[in-house]
Image (tube, rainbow, N blue to C red; front, side):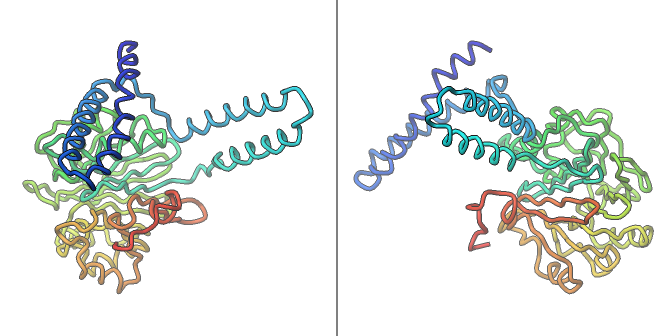
Length: 376
């Protein structure tokens, strides 16, 4: 550990050294391109070795959740204010008073209000063309799908899902649910299992290249408790070989509000679910079946579920054109609010006794300069 920290101290400046090199390369590109090309190649080599070095030393990273960071900020501010107050001399008393007041206001702004115990969240994590939804209460969490993992080793679980879980202070999961075996839904399952140690793992169908310990299949009619929420399995009725209709469909409710997670089912499966559970499907939030494919989201399905919001978990300008326009029009005709991760990024629904509040990273959660693109 000590050796790694020493090496980081030595190699760390190499990363900063790249910044002036990049600027010089940009200037050279305007004057003499061969020199710029040599510099860019050198920068690329330095960065490659630097990130290879970082990848081998995860023990040097310390992760803090948002709440832990707030506590650290409060402690630091307290000691700073105490030092300012006890600093001798009246000459700058007025200035010290102003500084202390400003620090207190800043700290108070970042301290979160204590939430109602009934509050819960539905977080649609932006995993590009795929799906990952986190449903969390005050003390328990369920992750539905894990996004894709690619042959290069890159995965949405490592780049998007796990950093977010750490940020909000989740160290373990109550449930990990993999709707079905397609890579864009199940790709990061083993990574999440290893990092988050879920107490229960539920599958819509057997996974193709991953083995998850102590996993079991979703059974129609099965009910689970997630804190004060009720989770009901609505599908599959029977398992076919590697079929989108094997998706584990869940309805999660607090008795007043509900979210429906529908995997990649098509119209045929939608009709089967409606025939069995028509009186139990109404949900304010619907995660669109199969990302808004033309083979899903029938008029019957939309009219029975009666969502206020439908979420399309897609990548921007994806090659399949999801959500297809005819599906968007079906929801529009039934006055459903359409939200897409392809244009809005991360999507959050906050549910409490006052109702449901929608927030997205583009419009609400990110800093003000992350405005909506003119092209999306």
